[in-house]
Amino acid sequence: MKKGLFLTALIMVFFSFPLSAQNTKPLIRLMPLFVQGIGAEESRLIESLVRSYLSDFGEVENHIDVSSEARLPDYIFTGSIYLERDSLIFMLEIKKKAADENLSFTMTSKSIGELALKARSLVESAFSVENDQTIPWESPPLDLTEAAVWGTWRGEPGIEMIRLHRMGRGIAIFSSGAQMALTWTIEDNILRVRQASPNVERYYHPLPYEAAKQLAAEAEPMAWDLRLYDNGNTLRGLKTFTGIGYTEKKLIELVPKKMQNVEWTRSGH
Image (cartoon, rainbow, N blue to C red):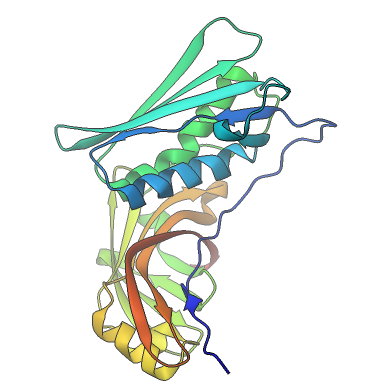
């Protein structure tokens, strides 16, 4: 039997927020982003995130799929990402069908991970203005303090529990029973959690042992960038990790700096 290729043991998961009940969703046309100063893979990631977040508010169409008989879009989104003095500038511009002017929204990030983390807020800011709050969007993140993150959290699939202690220390307990030491800091109202112990095979359960062994030897440390929501009961953001492709037993490809949306829920103090 021919061996199949299984791509990426860890997958991107997008959390969505429901659109208010309407008979017809607004049509949103997403134009290609103008990108300068970041790689093609990073550019595709940001564009896919923007598309996913826009889909919470309406039906998203690609500009190349538009025909002469197509319905006119209710909104047209354009955007750009460029590097300026070691900072990434992300600009989104929205044009409403019934309006004569365009509105622009801009943010600055220190890294592509931070930019990806803030992308949802930028999309929501655009709809906040354009829709006079008739479409629900996620509330702004809360102010982070050390006391706000101390305690026990339930993690994403594969992680049973995270304990964040004082002095920037913590521990994650995986479904496999493995434990990972963590460090954490708060910067720019973002909780930055980092793997602090060496990789072991059980961090990558349920991969086949040989593939998990190779991944443990070569993968970069895991990292999380999270923001606080829901009266302090939810940490939500992005996990950065090394993705893989493998055959039945052997790891054949490493995909560094993969990202996925994650959510941790408070379980106790």
